Image 1 (cartoon, helix red, strand yellow):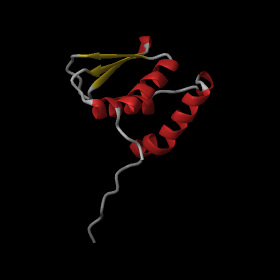
Image 2 (cartoon, rainbow, N blue to C red):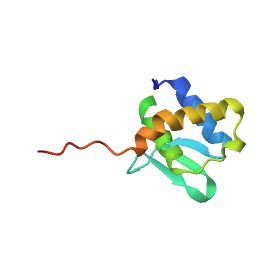
Image 3 (spheres, rainbow, N blue to C red):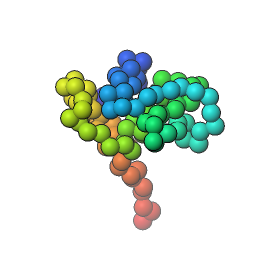
Length: 101
């Protein structure tokens, strides 16, 4: 089970930095809680978010960017694989909707 801790946040931030993204926590009127400056690889997260919301924002960003796993160190690659199999796959799966019968 994935725990939303400051340690996990630091690991995800480190993963993002390894693939070239800079993470900044700033004030802003973001619709989704974050903004990405594509041409500069900067992710700006709402600084008023708690740890869980920050992690969820970073996971959503990870889900939407291309990552070359050959750029990652071994530990980071293992962590990324764990994220993709457990967490990011949940973000991609549509919620089950019950059909009335």
